[in-house]
Image 1 (cartoon, rainbow, N blue to C red):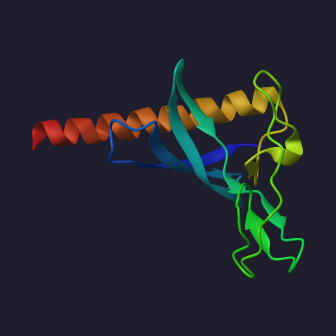
Image 2 (cartoon, rainbow, N blue to C red):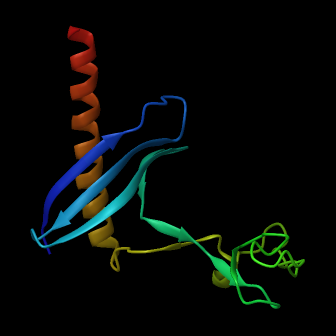
Image 3 (cartoon, rainbow, N blue to C red):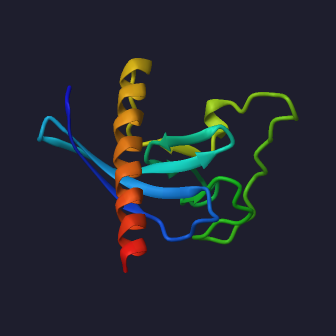
Amino acid sequence: MEITEVRVILKDSPDKKLKAYATVTFDNVFVVRDIKVIEGSSGLFIAMPSRKVKHPCPKCSFKNELRSKYCSQCASLLPVEASPQRGEETPISQAEHKDIAHPITQSFRENLQKKVLEAYTQERDKVQTGSALG
C-alpha cells in the first residue's frame, strides 16, 4: 500500500501538545482524516483518529461517555466504573478512546509516521518562512 498524499493543517497554539492534523490518502483511493501530530516528551509522534468509548445506561440503554455520573437521556445515576490502581495496566474495555483506524504492522506504522512528520515539518517551515518574509 502506497501513501499517495499527505495534507497537514497546523494548529495555531504553539504552547499546546497538539501541533497539527493530517489527512493521508492511500493508493489514490482511500483516505484517513484526523491523524494527530503531537509533541511528546521524547519528540513528535502521530496518534490515529479515535472516538470516545460509550457505555449504555442500565435503565434506558442510552450510550453515555465513559466516566459520566448521570445518564444524558434519563438522568439516572450511572454505576461507577472501577478504575485501575496505580501501576496496573488499563484493561482494553476501560480505555477512554478507541482507534477508528490504525496500522497493523510496526513497519507500516513507522512508514506512516515518517511521511506524516515529514509533511508536518515542510508545512511548519513553509509557514515560518512566510511569516518571516511578511
